[in-house]
Length: 630
Image (cartoon, rainbow, N blue to C red):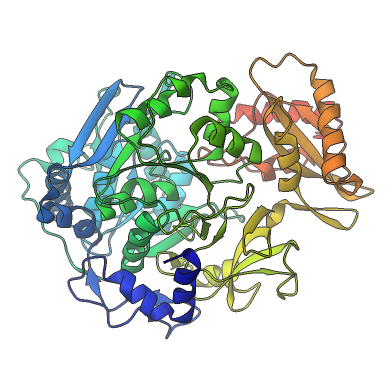
């Protein structure tokens, strides 16, 4: 069946579509129906079924005789180690850890915070929670103590599972002091902590509260999976809220299983036994969905990579891993490819490896600029698929469904809506706009299985944040257009649409023009306050390694390019060259913080910032242009 037929089949009978998809996973008791809408606009899926995520991700593959196949491959170029774990090993490890947690009083519905780096034990901790019906909340390892404390107080965990440290290319990140400080600051105190001691740093344990990972499990009997209801929370994942307090996205078990299982074959074209690699972190949504859960639910091999796209030790590390582990589908963020392209513009490192198993490269996490997509297509000769989703949705809203059919690629578009998502582009009054017109991207309710059910202990905030602007719709917070073929173009966060003398303009469209300049490796455009026009666009440019052209000339050229491509209406006259852009650890550019610095407004240091020193560099560059006045 073609994509159009499948999308139409979903649209004409969503109930039948999702009940059929639910047949692909294991249920102890099958659900009586797919959608439960008694509490609309809070919708639930498969609520009265009984299932278990860990059984679906681990035990069923062992029972099917596939226990000796690899489930997890850990690659840590920083410690020079590579380690594979079979499904059978994984089952024993997870069942033992689950048994130890249960012995200490962790049960169904109890929360457990996981604060770990990219090591297999992080996935084992997630699966152990799922095995006994505990609700995990993974917090990115090395996250600031205050932010961890806020999350401890919000989800009140019975236990915290952490590692002694994380490893960056040139430093050890001390997790345990951060954890101790967070517990000290939080009002809620966990009953106990389990610490995985890494040889790079052995942490000091607090008597009576902290247990060593191995000692904690010593002599414990492995436990079986506990059947839980379809609407039982699988996990809480915090996403940064615009108001400062983090929002705890709640994913429920049944819908999560069904949706992720559906995506593996239909979007990524992955079957049991294939190798899938999402180069992300377990602390982010991509790590939850596509490092831990989806590949294992499908029975594929997943890769846990502790390293960086460049510098661990070279810009060919991704390609070495893809070659050595015969990766079939690879998923990364455009920012990683831009970093590699900047270091290795001719792709010399790519030529060193045999990548014939690789069938597709998927991009998500931010807008993929056309230049990066074209470079990747040219160097690899495989489909380069941009797709679009959010922490809240947990899986792709729009994609090119390779497992169904490869649709024509339109560069700059993540392609088309996936089954489950009925997308409209709305004007400020909530009316659909014409094809090609910019508006707010909204999804008709109900959202499909696998998306957020609500926010943890904050149903009113959930409704206010997502459901009130456009009644009957989920508001994505992104602005974009839909063309006459139904292809979506995500132009910017609604906050990144700037108003220049009454014209609504997308900073994303300007960034696209800047990134097409041959000397520009990476860029960002923000809107700065202007007395005359309300806002003015201002560009930041990072240049390719080895570029010898005068920065002032490049600035003149990009100003000319924007004028030619977008028109004088953009009023794009200001740009500066900087060494690097301030980003979150997951690679998102901190545009909002840059705007505040430019406008001389007070700002809160973003908790997820990769390197706070970059903000001083940005301030200096802005001051040279007459902005960022103290």
